[in-house]
Length: 117
Image (cartoon, rainbow, N blue to C red; front, side, top):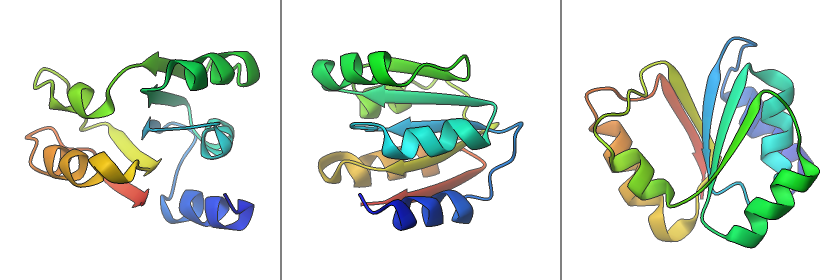
């Protein structure tokens, strides 16, 4: 990814140090690194076990929680309250629409959603 594009995504998200951010599909973590610098808490959900292992070994911060799992399944869990979260992600194309619809229609939708596809 282009570093300038990633910085622009972070700038457009209008993040604050007290924000909590959900990132689905962090991949190798270039956006994740920028998010951890800006906010209080990042929850990154990655489906690929190898990428989770890479992220766990390369990005270590008390502000970062990395989960191995299906982002779509995670946001479909109706018990989760996203109302104090912001979604900032370069979403995997195959699940982008369902994730956005699921979060937008949630009674506890995120404060904001800043995504690229």
